[in-house]
Amino acid sequence: MIETANLRKNPNSNLANGIVIKGYKSGLTLIIPEIGPFDIYMDELRNQLDKSKGFFKGAEITLKIGNRRLLDDERSFLVQLINDAGMTARWKADELLEPLKKDKKKQPIDHRNLIPSVTIRKTVRSGQRIEFDGNILVMGDVNPGAEIIASGDIMVLGKLRGTAHAGAKGDKMAEIFAFQIRPVQIRIAEVYTRAPETESEKETRYFRPEVAVIRDEQIVVEKVNQNYFNQKYKY
Amino acid sequence: MSGKVIVVTSGKGGVGKTTTSANIGTGLAIRGRKVVLIDADIGLRNLDVVMGLENRIVFDLVNVVEKTCKIKQALIKDKRFNNLFLLPAAQTREKDAVKPDQMKELCDELRKEYDYIVIDCPAGIEQGFKNAIAGADQAIIITTPDVSAVRDADRIIGLLQANEIPAPHLIINRVRPQMVRKGDMMDIDDVNDILAIELLGVVPDDETIIVSTNRGEPSVMESSTKAGAAFRNIVARIEGEEVAFMSLDYDLGFFEKIGRLINNKK
Image (cartoon, rainbow over all chains, first blue to last red; front, top):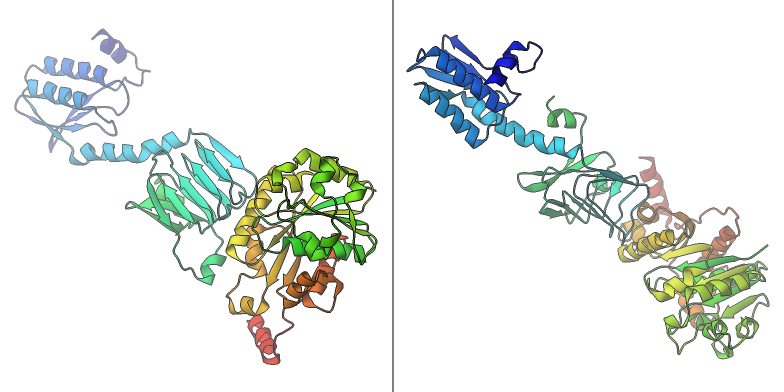
């Protein structure tokens, strides 16, 4: 309680703008900042509701929490608090789902930026095996009979014609990049696929960036066009 | 100047290591070099037969490394060239009768007196292979234009790299221009696409090889044959000469040649 008071007095604090209750035409809205400790905001909310002494009774209130991801406990605590004040809580439909969805997308990417990478400056030949807990960058070709196994992504600045296994510890977001993907076998997480039995002359001569990713539980090999990353990372 | 130790290897069996060794050795001897051929295929010796020297063997490689005879005693002088010698393998022993260190010592001993030491490596990647490459300065990889031989050659290149033998050279053996043209056989570009090492030569498939092998007369001696000419070019390249690659289109008909010209222009 004291903490909350202090925070309000301090205009420099990020938490200075605490919770906001606003009345719109559509009804009451409670805005909880995306960042900052949730329990402090809850204390603040309880204070305000106590002060209002039943002013909001019977009203319906829309909860806006932005991108904050609530634990089940936190969510029910918030709803309980509002119900105690005689109000009914309504989640902004898109916000209830969106934060969770965004999180799913974001989390693995952030996480991957931190994993180590190894660079192999040679052509990996038949019978050779490169295994690494992280990303693998091969500055050379990967020949038939060679194996590249990474817990993260695999990038081959050449032809990939051996066996490649990205996301070997189960990361389905892992990607395999190469200038030519014509592998014996390709695996991402637990999904694996073989190369098509027949391939045209044109395909064997193709030498431009390609990527293997999981789409709908299947590995697909696509050409990497100039908008590949724009489409992948929306901002 | 000390001699060069060249190992002829392939990984896969039956692609023509022994025939190539015999031809390279003989080819160098024709050019007046002092050459020793070493058969490192202990237990499965062939090089003596291909050279036609089988009946002259008294001592062998194992006797030499075990020091039961002198190197000079075991070396068999070729019947055609005074400057060509063969150190045969033991037929009744196994690969582990020789150790890499001993092989290295032997090569260092021989290189003092000879210009080239050509080692015929056994198939496989086990002890015999390790022995054969132990003393080598240079490697020649033999492959045929088929997927399995190329795969094995690739493996061997990796192993040579790991053993710090400088970049090997490649000979593609038994190429059939007819089949390549029809697209039924890998062509030189396909092989090169995977192995990506310097090409020393291409030997066309030639029936006369079988005849010369059975007679014990390396085909490099007959420069009129296609294979003989190819081996002469290879030997010249080993000696550092720049020789143009011979065309494999010699048996094209007139209309086929015209057709190819038109196709190339497209």
